[in-house]
Length: 125
Image (cartoon, rainbow, N blue to C red; front, side, top):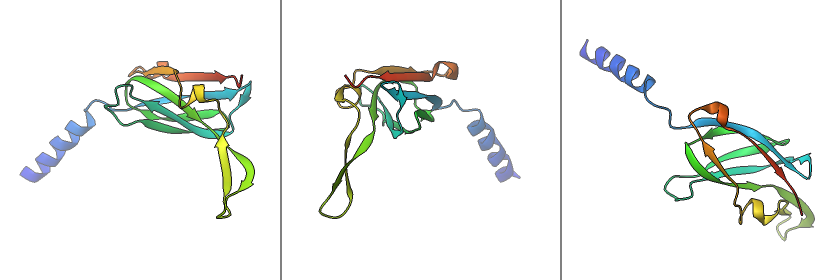
């Protein structure tokens, strides 16, 4: 009986705990065209938390992320047409560095999930 009560109390406690991640979604386009595929990374600027990473597919992304201010990195590899010495495809980054390695893009993930919809309209020049 005591074990059953402990299990029920534990389940209630876990069920009532605060969320640690929240849904984020949005779109990514380059020069007006949806980015076919890639990754979006939400990075804690203080580097205290792990990054949250989502897939970009046909210009859209949807995943869960920890709340707070985040630096955004967007990446999309493209085929160079070159084969490596091991027979694999060599890729290069399709997006300018200002959207990934040198990104100054930022968002704030909020508990009010209606605010977690982002649109990134990128330009190659």
